[in-house]
Length: 321
Image (cartoon, rainbow, N blue to C red; front, side, top):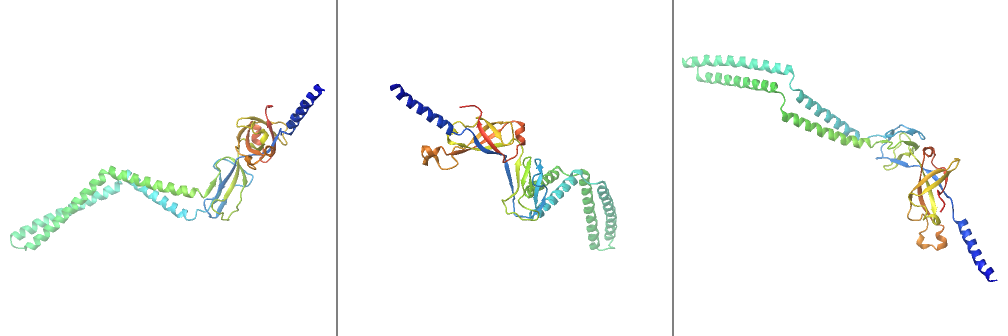
């Protein structure tokens, strides 16, 4: 009787342990997911172009949806005109005067010199007549004024010809370069603003949805296009509380995908620190076993890259506990 009495509790304990082992979940259910990118509208301007279709694969940088620039278009036109004007001014200073401009200045100087010679002779003639008392002093003053004016014109023409021959000063060229840099900076600023009206793909992927149609005005901040990014997908699962201690970042797991005969290897890349449902501190020990923790598992291998999103998966630890 003593031996039998001792064996009964051991038998019951073994039964309880086997029951607990049977109750503990061995596989975790979830789905295949991909990085989902929502590209939002910068303003409520009208959609003027939709360059892709839903389900189409696009490369990085591909244009997807374009909105009307609105009031930003006149500003960028002004910035472009200012930039072109500054560029032409700089090119003109760097190139210097043209040959015809120098020839024109030379001709102007020759004409001024001829006029000065005539006025000087006239002045000498009138001065001689005034000394002989044949003309009044006022006429001599007038002749002197004409001679001095012709001399000033000659000097101005000579100075202009000298400036043209010397070309642009370094200070003028530097000022023109600075003006061009300011114009280019203003244009770049406006271009940044107007680029926001064109939505491009930040990563290669598949266009999952285009919520708006051509001609519609989406609200600012609403998604214009939704992409599913290329690359290896991941499995999103909810880990039951009894398995939480064994599912840690870096743990190796097996992932069975519906429709695939071979299981995929995976690595736990993230698991939430808090339960997805009722807070654990408000539950009894029995209720805590019903908690679940969100986890994400990276799928290894090139074949996994072709898995579509949304397919159900079953995840288990790669090695037995």
